[in-house]
Image 1 (cartoon, one colour):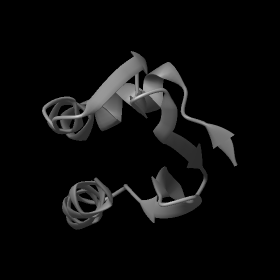
Image 2: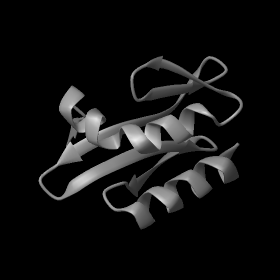
Image 3: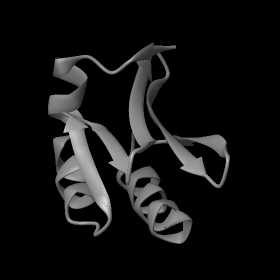
Image 4: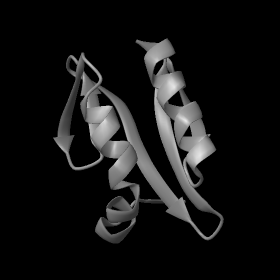
Amino acid sequence: MKHATPIALDVLEPVIEKIRLVEGLTEKRRGIFYRKSQAFLHFHEDPTGFFADVRTGSEWQRFPATTAADRRALLAAIKRSL
């Protein structure tokens, strides 16, 4: 699974805009977020859709990010992880 391309990030921009509003996260590069100095979230794409890897504690957890429902669940998971 490859990291999201600029075209994929264009599609994901609505959820990225919402993530930008989450206090405590810094966007180092488009679609790549850090919490303090540690990588926290980034996006992937493959033929089955879009995905976000979110650091939950010391582990990475992959969340689907293709549908509106996926993106709502992703935002909720981000907030729980902080």
